Image (cartoon, rainbow, N blue to C red; front, top):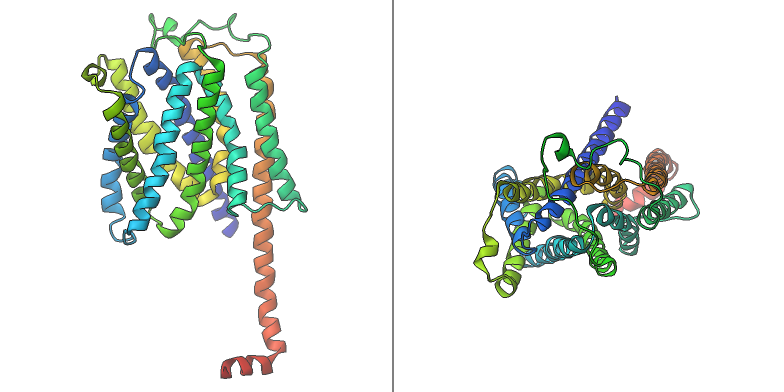
Length: 366
């Protein structure tokens, strides 16, 4: 019976992680489409976080009203810093980097998130690493393999695979373009720097969520506060950067769709899924699924925006999956070892107490 419950919980976590990566993969596409249509890089995240906050806040208030811990000034400061990493820096660096790059390239760069998260979590002792054991070596090797596969996708194109078999975009099948196709990469170096900043911010966000959830175990409330402070920070930036009222207007139904998707799916639903997965599986477990997103983005960008899929992407994806399996196996072995150790300690403690009755009486007298 216990085994069945464990498998069920594991499947729920895996399904949630796949759904999360699918949501984020779609966000790469709609964000690129929004930038192609001229949506402001400041206005877009403002609207995104307004929608996300309005979606999450009512659920957080009513569902966690009894379980929510008291709010202190220190917790507000931590929520502010969490929003600075996870909302302002994360979304800001991403949009600017995506403006200079493509969705597939942006997703490939984000595969460095597991390695950065691994180093941060290990430095803060949120993730145990023991290179003398197989599970520790598996986690390190798997992380390196994931980065290696992402590097191959980024640097080695290989031969094109789809142009003889598929139309240029999915819109061609429907008689017209769904979105504006991706332009050529404008500045690879600048886009890379901004996207690396996005990766560091994203990793810090996931690592910081773990200790905050221990002190404030109300996932929806943490998400709502993060969106709120992120919105305030973007509004302050917009007051200095985006003063043209024309940039705040929505000019088409497609622009409205990209904004709604960003707010409802990429922020509201995805943030709740992510924080639930971090609470159940830890920050490294969440980060290591990032390579799955690269594969999804490559397929979606090819079908919707007309981006080409190359053989290098397939080779890199296979290596990424091997690395992903290695890390998951390491995490599974680590949990099994901890469980076995706890069982041994639980069995030996009563025996030790029975062997030392005089010590127990002395302890009780104290």
